[in-house]
Image (cartoon, rainbow, N blue to C red; front, side, top):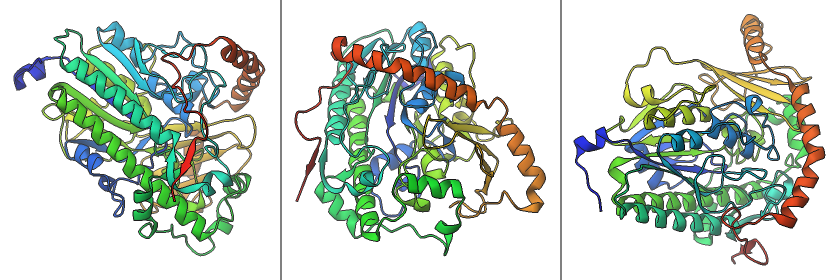
Length: 487
């Protein structure tokens, strides 16, 4: 096994281990301030690295967010707004850039690529996606955004927990393999997981532990009746406007249990990295594609711009290279990951990037010229109206087509209870933020692209079901039910 000194570590190009969750609330980690959830591995990673307290996804849905993560570009720049959108094969990703720079770039697990191209620059795939491909989603019932998606909850096991265990095993084997090679090329391993995505079903010991410990979200008197009408409609459309306290408690206990279960998966990944002797020269990045409301503000799932949905956990750790135990308040985005990797890997630059390298925030206590705005978009053909968010300083501005604007001051109102958009003292600020948020915003164009793609989708789905080989691209789904209750 190759060993190096500390001085040699600094001179080498680093390996990368990137772990991406699906639907992990930025609030549910011990290191994020939650007093109930047990996340020793996330907490250990944060103590050894930098945690970003204000990191946002480019779109609060799996596919669009992940494509932004891969390309360093926002949703409208990728023409990716829904989980059925294909990223064109000629759009460069950080996998292309690192591969061109001499890295072995490997995908282990989920990335929610849609369409015939299931690699987008990755040279190897060591375990397939739990739902990759065109219209061929291998996912359990009650996985979406509906009342049933909340009420199907409790103790048990799911295909998702089984899948994440399989991803851990495959990635551990890969790291062990690399640890025993005297390889010249550094590697970038991206491990994609599904937990803690709903259904809110977790192993019985974890569910039982949290059932009596989780707190129900507290809301001001009259809050739900006075929240913006567009969000009242959002709740009613998903059938979650009249959940009972018991239904909320069960679902939250299940979600907390999933987070702890997934913390164990992360612990296994970090242990495998150390056992392979690779920890000294590997930069570890943890993030989620988007968040989970988990009952906060009377909401569940994602697809909105409240903090629990659109903000994501981001921890970057490399002892000896970066600062340790540091919290960064600056605004960050998942589109910043690609330029960060490219800079650290000394790889060829992607020509057009909206993201910005996070390296200054990892290495310098004071960064005076950091940008002061990030964006997120949500567009679909039916149901939710097109919407866009801009975060600037303490202000979060939200635009819904055909609806009044929404404005929160997150410093004064971190729970987003008070819409300040109608405050006469903020009239000029609202106008300025609205103007900035809508620059380049063209929902009609986006809807036109989505309609055209919808017409093409069925033939591509039929092609895949008839001809597409799942080998190494789609994880073989276990036969029978995808949810196994535990009494």
